[in-house]
Length: 568
Image (cartoon, rainbow, N blue to C red; front, side, top):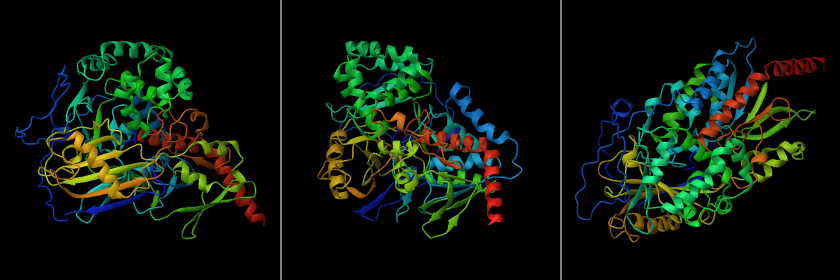
């Protein structure tokens, strides 16, 4: 999921298997979305260990979204809004810059959107025939969507929340109750909840949620964990950044926090944040997430998009860009970065041999793709050479359609705490467009995936079913003697978000490169939200900001090139 999941995937493959092509589509259902009057739950009972009892008939599934939380007055939201407004309010350029951007994931889309807001003319070039990069999705022959990942939108994503508002699509986020729900491996089919009460401010709501849950951590473990976090709370951002050199496991032991805390909570968190285990993940990543979740009342509140990301999020961004004179081209893969004699960019050469010349150039491809495109003349420049340590992590997204409605699930994201699975959701309940009252579609993140990325789809499905049998012991058996698979899709991304291992932070580049007129954007570039959808959007804004700030320099550079060409 990359809670933050989440902008063009390297060598992404997606395959499908249809077991039974005839399955009825769901009838229309009326959702109320953000229009519904929300319930003030106050102190929700912890439901600490819940399971539907065998033999009990389920109630009719009713999907009720919660109202959008009050985010607009938070410091981070206002900071993000100010940055957004700076583009709209900036002086209109006498000569708009033509900016070529390679990659239409969230980072590239964000860069183009904010450049267009500032009065410039972006040309967005996407290699594939689908928008979104790491949030791409496809429709199969039955009309069902399958996605690159299970994407969650947090209250702690101020730039994304602003983006939805700027596009007028706030109502496309389906907010869920403010809870985190974990499966209990030692009690198959049961769940443990952390419920954040609406009546308390941050960080008290988070502290209450932790204290009320007695199934996952004992009181002595909670106390030791709390004491271990004190330096992070007192030290602020400087302390958080200084922990980049330690793994989660190393930091926990250094702080005297029992290993069981890591096992019970932070294996699941690590896999959700970066698709790897706590013995690899940098502690900085966990502390950044905890800081956002504990410092902002609605920071950990989650929302699902109401349909496929390319249609429900990316397309409105493209419409906005085009309405302001920008261009978006699909099936336009960057093949080569052509250089001038001084080492600056002369043009982008595409896979069809067309040449794009511009006033400024941006590479918004994932770091692994960009490293393949780096010109030979640039490879020893420290800015580019340090990228060698940034490597995308493999991840697999699995979709399984069953012949029945599963009962042991929630209208929410669920942390599986499985050795093979990260998070999952019954998308037939959580998402309007995917809703089906008769059959469940589970979307699951298979991680860590390094040892599985080369396996066949059937092997991955078999392994997934073994794990699901533990999560749904009364409803799913590995041999399909209970719920039957109608069809499945497996989407493999050999190189997804960059692997946030220790000592990566100094390797992350600023958006403005040392080469005049060339810029980078992507969640791997320097910004405070690490490898996430929020990080991708923020990196795009920072890239656009750098280009706007360099306007006079870029115009002068263009005039110089014209003069040199005329003198020849």
